[in-house]
Image 1 (cartoon, helix red, strand yellow):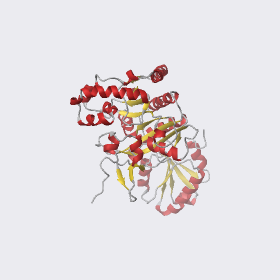
Image 2 (spheres, helix red, strand yellow):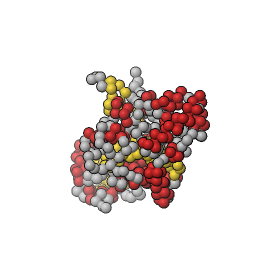
Image 3 (cartoon, rainbow, N blue to C red):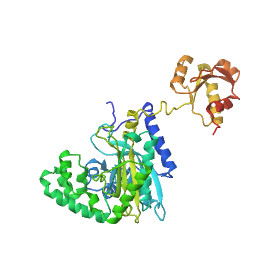
Image 4 (cartoon, rainbow, N blue to C red):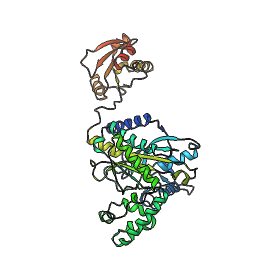
Length: 427
């Protein structure tokens, strides 16, 4: 039997990772510049954590989670999203007691959906969460930060910011009542999913991809019409500040997000470049979630960026620099007769030039084949060690990317020469 990866789960091999490393490096750099710190937590949690946070009536919990019993009979799940696990980790480790937190995490999430381009069963996200900030300044910071990320990635011209507010609890309750009354009048036009959601969580109907349902919703009441003064003023202030900052946006009254824990401001960045998989970043506020999961009340707001779709977009627009990530600076080529001497020279060089990425040609081979490997490695220079070089305690330095003459260099001065080539000790 030839083993294959599971459907909807895939491998990322070294030659295909440059785009990922480019996207991740830009995002992590931006997060650091805004003062966010990394947190790491397990990919497996108790299933009840997601039922209580994401919502039992959501598609994620009802249809998509990978859940199973462990040997103790506990029901556990692979994480379908990151916010619930992050909140659990913060509560358990006392990170929210009389303090604020700006955090980010990255890694795989799991949902058993129908695999398609940009939507896999194991997918990768970078998630960002902030706790203890009542807003709306932190909401704006989140949106400003995502806008800056897309600018740094060169994607600003192909993404659109959608924003909405789903109000505070009282606003949402009033809206749900008016939405239910409207939909009950059109219940015969609803599909089975929408009829079920009408009883369990009517807001989920707004997420429907069924065009017939969207036609029914075209004349439905809008959340923004049910807002109280405080929620309306806060939303207006956010819209006004985005305009002053020059960030274009669309007010999308049907944007509610697919998870039950959201409240007030929600936002989503979309693109028309990837077909039906148009959302690449989404988030919003979830002030009640910490308390819902057993902690003391603490405001929360966050977002997640889907890496698959962001990478696809970067590749489609060809914005990833050629050879963005090269694994090697220096490639060491050795005659088979002197390999033991060559590897000792290399280790001494590594100790004196710790900033250099140095590859030693293990496995022998002719000098010609080794030089081909050196060229394919992306290294800037090759160091050649043969019988003559061993006897004179030197190496031959060959430039692979520049039109310079090959030179014989004493091993004692080699670190200084490489330092000047690669500016190891520079600013």
